[in-house]
Amino acid sequence: MGCGSSKEDGGGAAEALSWDGMVKNPKTWELERAVQTEHLQRMRAEFWETRVEGREEMWVALMAAADADSDELRFQIVDAAGIQPALKRKTLELVYDERGAIYEVPIYCLSAPSNVDGENACEEMKDARFYLQGYYESHRPKLVGHRM
Image (tube, rainbow, N blue to C red):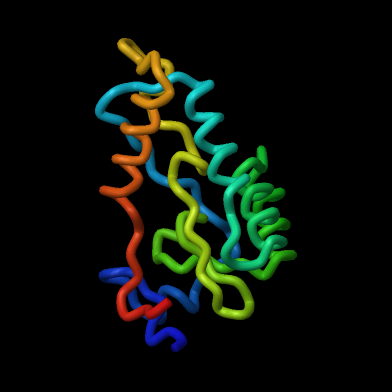
């Protein structure tokens, strides 16, 4: 058990060591079909309410950092909790705590798709869930050489 490496495809150890402590926002993303804000908020709430693995205080800190309205506040939360990004793009999508435990946060909990509330947005929650989960599963971050 343990991890052999915590780097993302194409990332190097030097990049991981040069982290300045600032967490970056995920890149702009778009769903195949738009969803409504209320559906996005419900999916986020469901995610945060159902976390059972890892340490509860880490999930609380991650949710607070994801909801932070400034980079400085997000930095303070991440720093105080001892959270570090596990990917070279330095987002909160995949992080680890001081004990080495990995935490994965779906992109839809960190930012809204560019076409939220767009034309022909899904009317039903089941449809919104399908598009949000589908995007997340097909764009899920991966670590190289990490064994959970």
